[in-house]
Image (cartoon, rainbow, N blue to C red; front, side, top):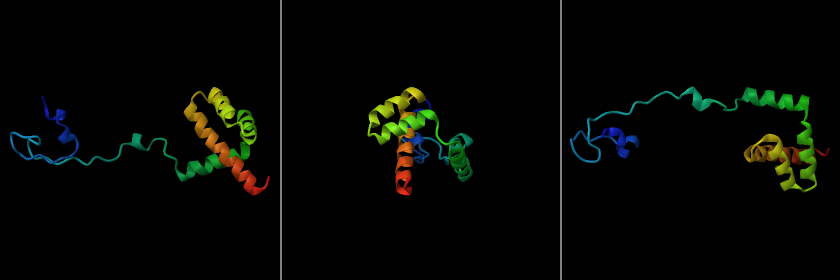
Length: 113
């Protein structure tokens, strides 16, 4: 049984240097490792936000998004979510898209379109 099974060592509790006890073992210092690139993957930078907004402005909405917006406007939110779930594959994606489209509709109302 090694030190890896001791939960105190994982929590970063300093070892006592003693042979026995919950924090037994040589006194060591935790290594501070640099952040791995995989932790940053998918994080939106300012550049990608601008590019996505320009593409959205130029290309507009997909046909399924336009239909979903109509359903939302007619206060059929549940129907719109189910429709988007079928198109996008997962309920999580559908919810995120619903949120985005709802915000877009609200912005359009504020702008007076």
